[in-house]
Amino acid sequence: MKVLVNNKKQNEGLLSNAFSLKDVVTQVFSTCKKMEGETAFLNDVPDGLFLYNDPRLVGSVLNSLVSSIIKETPGRAIRIAAKIYTNIILLHIKQECEEQTNVSMNELQTLALQINGIVNITSFRANITTFAFSFPNTQPVN
Image (cartoon, rainbow, N blue to C red; front, side, top):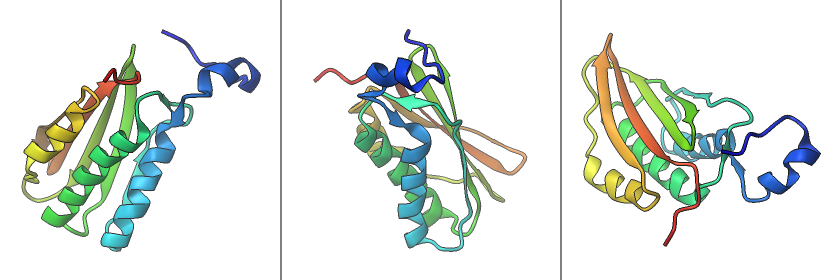
């Protein structure tokens, strides 16, 4: 596993194929905000978390998931947080709601599989529905 440090020159070669995951989430929120202006979006992805997988496919899965959540329960805040475990990125997408948010997973899972990822509903506790999206942080092999 390559470790990134805060020295831009040392990371220059490593970052040539990397994208800021926080920026990808910000772009998804920007697109979804046009669809639903009343929903609050909270981007808790840490700065410095770099994405080596295809940012368009990651963004497509997130956009589809967030859009589906908004359609099911509009006007509720959506929070996305991320962690990295070795070379796996795990995103938690949370929404506070009265009942569990039900989203069709078939289309989302098909998209996620394009990057060897998995999407599922992980819990509904304390009026918060949590979705998980995990994928390898490497460029998928075709």
